[in-house]
Amino acid sequence: MPIMKSSNYSASNLLAIGDWHIGHQSLDYALLKADLAYAKKKRAKVIILGDLIENAIPNCASSQFESNMHPEEQMELAIELLRPIRTQIVGIHSGNHSYRTLKAAGIDPEKIIAKELGVPFFGSQHLWKLNGYTIYSAHGVGGGTTPTGRLNALLKLSKLATAEIYLMGHIHSRIVHKEMKITPQGERTILFATCGSYLKYDESYASRMLLAPGKMGMCEITFGTEPYVIF
Image 1 (cartoon, rainbow, N blue to C red):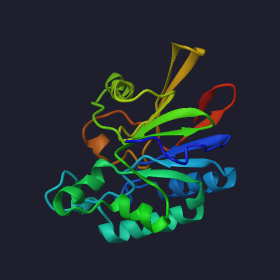
Image 2 (image 1 turned 60 degrees about the horizontal axis):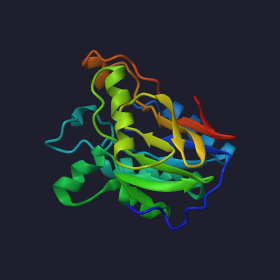
Image 3 (image 1 turned 90 degrees about the vertical axis):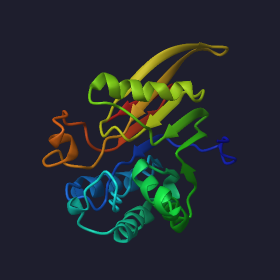
């Protein structure tokens, strides 16, 4: 998990987006298209945090009956949606829904999507730089059923890598958390943030499991004297 060779990215805004679940019947397609249009208009850098497609294959946790297109069509739509902003994409992470076909057939849909777009594939985790800030991003794991559980899953990233910004998807809710750390350069703000999903709550997995609705959509980070999150 090396720092990217092209680690001198600069941008006034970074958009963290993921958990689209293209192909699921509960996808909020209007919200997704609006967020992508916003990304293009802002000319911001974009980090894709995984689970772009639902990828409900046989013998997986998701129900194929909740999908309205098969995985190949899902990949094609993801590529079509991302192509207009491909020059803004810093990297694409692989999510647990991609791991289904990786485990079953050695094929990672998000790796194929990244290759088709000509953008870096970040795998499950990556360490990189933007505006001089070290960023550790991952699709993420765990999260539990409570706000505390979701926050703990996010904070665990700091045990894996040393960074100033930690970004994660997977938990289907936007969270922002800040901590102050003492460094050789003085006090430094450490930012933790997640993106939300694009699945509507009604008839979703969260609804069936009696989980609270999470905040949907992307997370926007703006850089000034320190990074801060705009929802």
